[in-house]
Length: 233
Image (cartoon, rainbow, N blue to C red; front, top):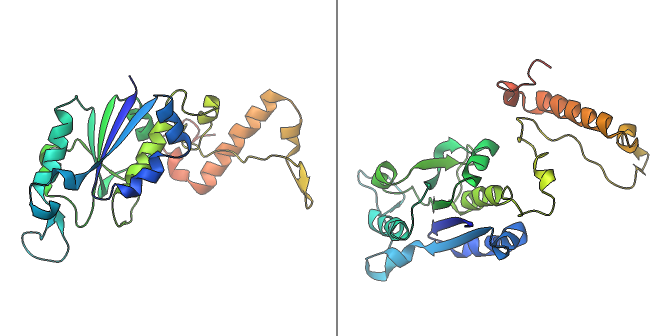
């Protein structure tokens, strides 16, 4: 069974281009993943498919009404069991590679794209199982975070990429940033590729890559080494 990701959004057109290009498109064609985009307005019981309203207690902004969100999630849950119902929100848990790996092992996921001032909090209290943020900043809506989450999951699925071994060398895969990478020509404008990479000695090359990864992580993202096996290197 392919991994299924259902994305609930007020702006489905923002996600259609994402799911129809590159690795994500190929993974769907290979039946490795199934991604469905649901228009939240289709689940509104109100005239003109209204999905938002003013918040109780005043202050500016609009809030997703509870009915369309509840209806959309209930509709999906009536068809299958979901491992996670994810809500994209700036006050969620910061997303990382470890979480992507965890989610890639699931079978069925729902991602609810936040918008406006958010969603009626009762949805978060009673239906959402995980709240995710992709960074400490605010976007216009949760469609971009949903695309980021889905893309990071899909590329981890077996068969999704042309070279699965390259996934093992990605940044954050072992709490380390990736080492520097080079390609032809070996010299350009006097700038040379490190000799070790041209040596053909694979053992020494791998040792060099690991050391470079450790050094770059210490310099650029030392926080990643706090719980890493490499912190005392």
